[in-house]
Length: 204
Image (cartoon, rainbow, N blue to C red; front, side, top):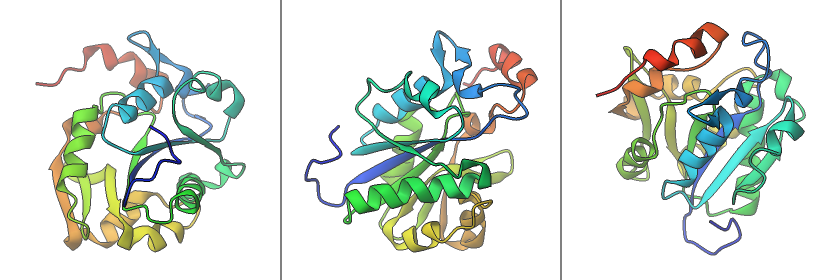
């Protein structure tokens, strides 16, 4: 996966992993599940898809986290303004990738703290993109990330306020969203208790 390769209308996965994990008490990206850190797990999942570019956005504890994934064929962006909110990290990553690849066709937004999201599920999102509509995960009566945005939404993504996430844009354009059932996306890690319950989580 070479970010500099010439692929028409390439697709990208942005893995957002810049947060300070204040509720977790330490960098949750470094927590280990089944022998891999959450950040390594999320990045390797992204690399197992058909995405042409995987861009990981770091912020808090960037150098420590970078050392765990630096050997992988990814683009790493460090958002110095990560504390402003998740929107600032999304914008930092997308700005970098669109500068590198002005013909970028679509971008998937994923989070490092959704450990059960699988590569084949992300592939379902990519496969449902028709160039016009947002494709988003549907779970627990809501819709959110992981989600794939075609190029027509890049300007709005780049215009997000620092505290706003991709979900705000999904909700804004709900009539233009293809929903894919994604029960595993409901499991995210915010606290040590969340992490402690992971061993009891199963999916059909």
